[in-house]
Length: 189
Picture 1 (cartoon, rainbow, N blue to C red):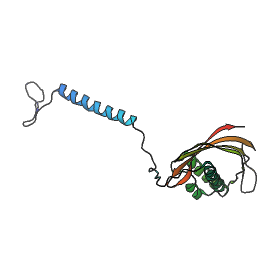
Picture 2 (tube, one colour):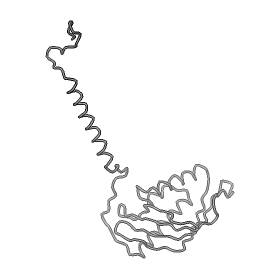
Picture 3 (cartoon, rainbow, N blue to C red):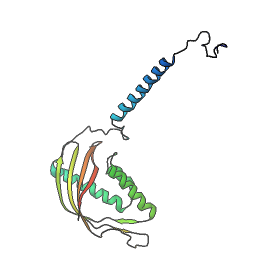
Picture 4 (cartoon, rainbow, N blue to C red):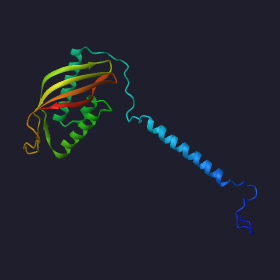
């Protein structure tokens, strides 16, 4: 309600007015709280999309056992590509594996385009880099001469027909089994 003589708004009966200085201070305080919340949330790690893996029956593998486990997973990975079978991938890759996500996308592309993969890998050497209770790293020196064929059988491969690579594989113990977590090509010839 405005005072007719001054034209200045007066508080309604039963309500109190807040001075502009107090309103500014309260606004500034709320802004400081908002900024502090944003800064705190930036410093926290982002939430994971996959629930944490359980590792109840951790068994440390000997180096020969670790190499045998890798060979089993690698053979299953090659089979999944050979048959364009995405359902096999959940037994090969951890839930949070980026390379597993890439494999799923690649196999879907093969299926949707009618391309057949003929994966050809010849391992020259395998070496244990680290062997822990929940993670194993293996360095593989491998020749990749994989080819790709369309529905008529025509070779539609791109890139070199033969490539030598050194790949660092990381296996992780997830839900009581070893799976591939990551792979990094360290060198190509």
